[in-house]
Amino acid sequence: MTAQIIDGFLMLLHPVTFLYLIGGFLLGLLFGAIPGLTATLAIALLLPFTFSMDVADALVMVAGIYMAGLYAGSITGITLNIPGAPSGAITTVDGHALMKRGEGAQALGMSAFASAIGGLTGVIILIALAKPVSSLALLFQTPDKFSLVLLAIVTVTIVSQGSLLKSTTAMALGLMIATVGIDPMLPEGRFDFDSYNLIEGVNLLPAVIGLFAVCELIAQAGMPARLSQAQAVADLPAPRRRDFLPSRARIREVGLFAMLRSSVLGVLIGMLPGGGASMASFIAYAEAKRSAQKPDEFGKGSYEGLSASEAANNGVCGGAIIPLLTMGIPGDAVTAIIFGVLLLHGLVPGPTLLSDNFMVVSPMFAALFVSSILIFVSVLLFGPLYLRLSRINRGVLYAFIGMISMVGVYASTFSIFQMWVALAIGVLAMLLRVCGYPVVPALMGIILGPYFEEFLRRSLIVSKGDPSIFVTSPISLALLLLTLGFIWMLRIGPARKAASTR
Image 1 (cartoon, one colour):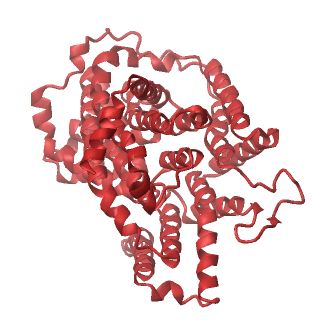
Image 2 (cartoon, rainbow, N blue to C red):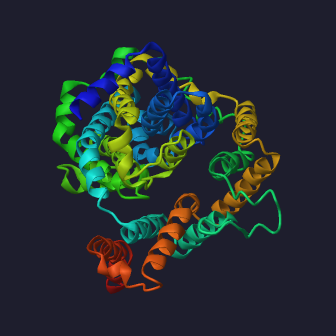
């Protein structure tokens, strides 16, 4: 395995592959830093263009976008108090407070340093655990796979922000959309309303474009083309590049151990399907405040709080990829789209992926490692320019994104109908957002729905309709108990505790 990882780094030295990494990293910085754009949207737009790429180049570029996008969400959060992505929301609290104190350059530098630590920690744990977890996953039988998918569906639903009823409804909508088209066990269509256009079902790319790109375009349509001049930072003196370099005293004040602890928390939460960078940054921030010597400074300009949230959200990157590659379960919205990239190139994420095609995905591991280092390099190179990103005219930007989205859907499906499907799903996603329903469970339902149905029906066929097959298998029983444990820890337990304190 060590030799294969080294080969992955050597493949990254190929000029074309390395240029894809740099291009993806810069794209991730751009999309992550501009409010309203995210790494998820960037990878969704890139998805149709991966058809013509070599699979290693596609995975390297996606890895660069992922790592850079998670970090870049804090850039406008620190400078303008407008997080570029949800993962940068908690960083904004202390980051912008530091900006108002005139320490914006140091805040951006410390944010990049902590993100690099988190990213490197996540990749190292990914490399260490990927093979063992994959070997363990080979022991899974069909009932075990059903219980694993059920665990993912339940976990994604209960960890989503907001009402449990709303997240369950969003997941149910995704599962319903996944049932449209050819029956996976019988050669006949269903829920297609006798339309030959729907017989193939809803493709993954139109669903992703609709849920994220089209939905975001509709949401941003009512926003002003430019941010108000009151929010602009043009009046601030231009900082020097060395101002973005964190001082040794500042690093000692925060503590490398504290950043590593937050990074590991991010990795663990990233491994939980549906956890995501937002949850990781919040939990790491809360833990850092609990153990801090000066908790009163949190929320008023604390470098400890800023570093904790940033180390955790980039640690998620390596953690979220572990269940994707080893079990075929996306850890968050970005890895759900990476799931699509793998499928488009004929690679099925799951227990056999690393054993049969480790050389194909090893460049992605190397790209994640290098991208973590590039995070810190980028703030030294582009720090003075970050303040100008928020002044881009949104009207031109979103018109371009809308065009690319629809062209991408057509290029991948050669179907005008699928373009309409993407628009319809985008309108549906916007309605969900307006009513407070989360979108990620819907996407996970669309992706996991076919597997959920297939493993359930195959298991019942093997057992001749006896549902006890799911509890007679030790692995399946353990996963079902784990599912109940998550429901108790994340929903029932906190609800009872809140009720008892009233």
